[in-house]
Length: 465
Image (cartoon, rainbow, N blue to C red; front, side, top):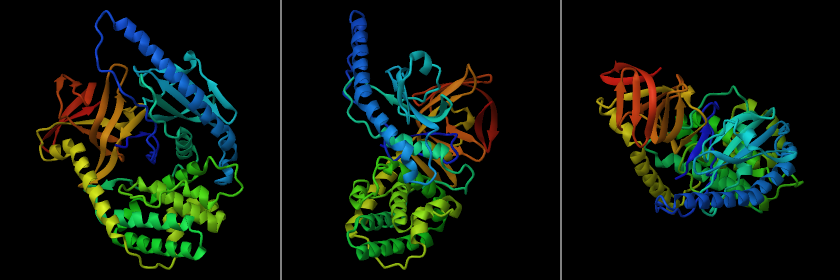
């Protein structure tokens, strides 16, 4: 499952289509006895060091090369984009979650930080990111987890860091409100419509013949109009996400091509998948935005100057005045989308079962926590709306109330209300209440909080002070 990490303080919660970093391998589950414990620890340390050296030599240097080469020229991709006051700090974490190495990388190159330097920084948990500053520069911190085995996969952290820096520092801070929540259960039709928009625009972008390209754009307009007219609420709600994610994705995906005078159809063909199936609202905003902005740029690059002022999504800006040509979705595509959505709905029901059960059972207490208590990154498998409630699926975070009280949430779905910054957590695991101290001892909830107790609509509610 795609796991997404984001910084809650960002107004427009953003996450990459990429799995941030995947470091995996076979683990030895045998437990050493007392006589072998010290030997095993020494071996583990050597294995960690080997992995870290491999990352340092191959991975960090590759990111440095891309940053030095491309960041100074990002204004070729989008006007006035200036990363000279930005950097990214990459932390490598050991098995205990503590940083063992760290590098700061900007347009002048990389610098390996000393332990005294990186130990003072508030770095995110493994596979997370956070917005911060380093050496007076606006920064994105990214933490990578290393297992005591070979590295199986590392997805492009350069593109990822560039994407998140754009969100954090290079997009408007005050903008039209919106929601990226996917209605649960997921409906088939709007996902078919958005998939057909993407497929037609992808084919238009890479077509060798201008007339064929135009025809694909007109077919995309047909699906856009159907989606807009039949699902007006979704059209309005997702606009902001389409704008912000489309813009960030467009720049980040082209951020390794700044040395080229012209980006060719062949270049674009390596960045897209014309046969993609888009089943998740909000996640599809990345790819839809990328292809639409690429086509807009082909027709008139000057559109970028007023892009945010217009407050229109990339697909709206491209297709709103296009004469539509009727199109028919391939029957196999419709069947496959329904199959995938049925699977997602089934999985999601399992993930949010604690929420669904609690809504029908008031004997289950709720814990309310201010989201401002969250420290570092959060993990979310999906954003959903159900019966006018906003739900984070398989949510992970750490809430720090004070120096003595904190709560760790590990892949547990919660109800969230961003308007009043309250997260609601059904207490379906073991807990104790002693005076004003709530102690949680479950697999998914662990920690202590100071709380007040109230009864709301027949349900016991603990409210973190």
